[in-house]
Image 1 (cartoon, rainbow, N blue to C red):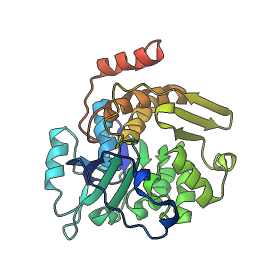
Image 2 (cartoon, rainbow, N blue to C red):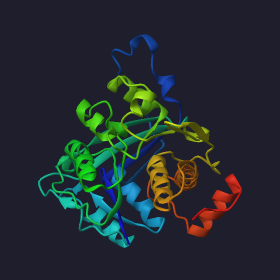
Image 3 (cartoon, rainbow, N blue to C red):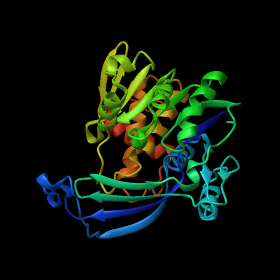
Image 4 (cartoon, rainbow, N blue to C red):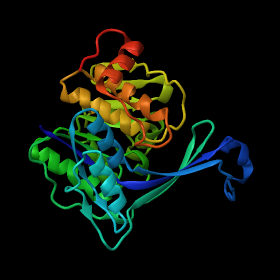
Amino acid sequence: MPRVLVSGSIAYDQIMVFPDLFRNHFVADKLHNINVSFNVSEHNEHFGGTAGNIAYNVKLLGEVPTILATGGKDFARYDEHLKGLGIETESIHRNPEKSTSFAYILTDKGDNQITGFHLGAGGTPYGPFPTEQAALAIIGPGCFDDMRDLPIACRDAKVPFFFDPGQVIPALPIESLRGGFEGAAAVFGNDYEFSMLSKRLDWNEKEMLEHTKTLIITLGEKGTRIVTHEGETTVAAVPAKAVVDPTGAGDSYRAGFMKGVLAGLPPETCAKIGSAVAVYCVEVRGTQEHHFSMPELKERYEQAYGGMFPL
C-alpha cells in the first residue's frame, strides 16, 4: 500500500482547562505589561504533536502513515504507544542529546487556546526524505529546516504535498513560507492563520492561488471555505455531540481530507470527510484518545450530509 508521508512534530502535550474566559482576566490598557496567572481545573498529559496526531488518524482511516520527525532521549513511551497502534516507528529519528518536543496547552471555556511549545529534539533536521513509494505528503508545523526542504524534495520526486504551517507562521522564515506554497496541492489553515499568512506574505487569496491550487480555510463549527481559481465553496461542519476539547481537531481534519484525496474525491467531499473525522476528536479530551470504525464514520457522515458515504 502506498505510504502517506507525515512531517511535523511529535510531542508530549500537557493539556489544561481554564474554567473561565481569558478575556475576563486581561486589562485592555495594560496589555503592554501582562502578568497573569490562570488557575486550571484539569490537567492531563497526552501523546500529541502535529505529525503524531495526523498519523494516528491516517491509521484509523486504514492508510499507512510514515512519520518524518525526530524524537528525543525520552521518546521510548511514545514509541511504545505508536507501535501499540500498529504505526511503524522506524522512520522516526532519535536525538539522544535532547528531550522530545513538548507543548503546554491552556484552553478556556470558549475554546480559546494559549500554547507554549518547545521543539527540543524536534528541531533536528531530518535529513534525506524517503519519498519513494509515497502517495502524498503533508508538511506540518515542526522542524524549520524540514518545512523548507521537504517541499523541494516532494516537487523533485513528483509527490503531491499539502502545506500546513499553522502555529509557526509568525516564526517561520518568509522564504520557507513562500516555498511551502509553491506547487502545493493545497494549503491548510484556519481563518486566523490565513490572516497571519496574508500579512506576513503580503499576498491576498488571489495572489496565494498563483502558487498553490487550493486554499483550505477551516472555520471551526462554521465549516470550511475552499478557494480555488474556479471560485469558492463553503462546506458545513459535522455537528458535535459535545465540544470537550478542540485540541488536535485540525490534525484529524487533515487526515480525513487526505483520505478523500487518496480516493480521488473532489475537495468538497474531502472536506466533509475531514469534518466527520475531526468531530470525533473534539468530543473527547486529548488528541489521540478518540476512536471510530469506518462503519461508524459512514453513519456520522450520512447523518450530517445525507447521500452515500463515498469511501
